[in-house]
Image (cartoon, rainbow, N blue to C red; front, side):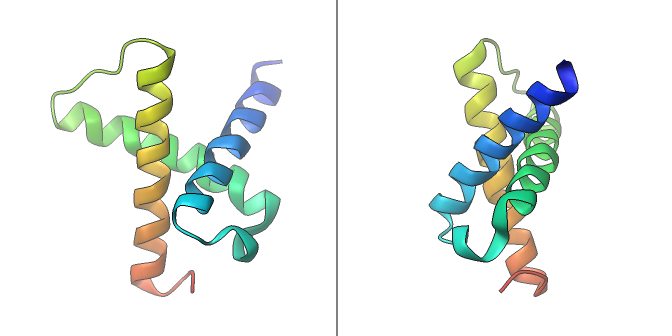
Length: 82
């Protein structure tokens, strides 16, 4: 059950980040799920390195979305995502 919830939440976070970065039509649903899950981990790692801790559901969601946006930016910067 936890894996299914992770996929759904990752998809929503990836979708929202792709809307923010205007790449929604390019990525697709599987890309949104992957970017949401990997970007969430990236956001939490970067927040931890900055000495920030996300307490509560809204803060964790915001950190996850920011991480997904950073991941999309990195993919655009490297040319993997146009």
